[in-house]
Image (cartoon, rainbow, N blue to C red):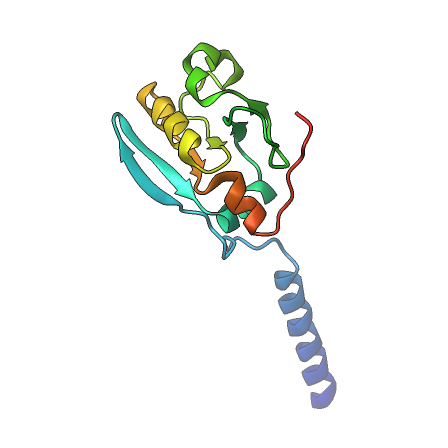
Length: 148
């Protein structure tokens, strides 16, 4: 009889443990993206590398903007193209909420850094830039879409 109770208790405890393990994890992913802060007039934007950008695209919660001119391709997931020097006249293509997350990129990172600075200067507070741009993206073995 003691043996049956012991087996039942062991079985019940196992069921509880398995049920607890089957729930949704609240542990954040190991690849939490923090970026590298870049201080500019009016605030800060964050530079991210290709690996961080891939992680961000897996759980996309931002407007992804190609600011390169002339067109040389898009990173998959791009939402809109706005020339780096035409950000202000095209604010209607961006969220009105100045706290919305916006990620910019270009071919090498130079034009997108200018666009990021412009956005911060215009009051946007959650601006991210792909450091190295499409060149770094392709060097990482990742594809571009060649149709606008």
